[in-house]
Length: 145
Image 1 (tube, one colour):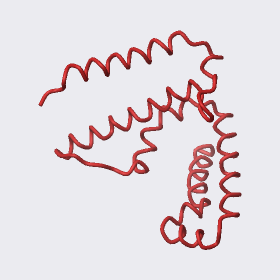
Image 2 (image 1 turned 90 degrees about the vertical axis):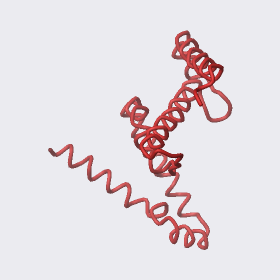
Image 3 (image 1 turned 45 degrees about the vertical axis):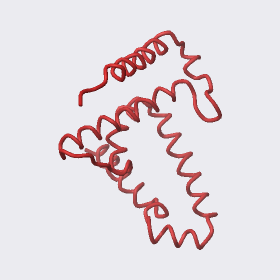
């Protein structure tokens, strides 16, 4: 079954709508809130992320020769690379520190029974130091090279 031309046309129209809207916005307009947590710019990042997920899934399905699903955690790094590269360095470090502090506080205040349950099923979600150390070691080694 070939792609329905109506689907093709609707997808292309939505892409053109992205291009058109993005092309006429000012920096201030990109920062305008959309709902409680997003900005207009974040809408574009969100669209890029999920479209990249579809691209990755189409690659997997084509390679496997059948429908396949993968846990988003397994591909999130690859999908996010161009997005992360666009974040200014000082913003990236600020976000990392603020998020680490918030997560540390959340873990420290988490009910004991839930800590035990999460440690059993997803230990690295509680033992964040493993993940942080792994990547900080890589960064420091790169800086020393």
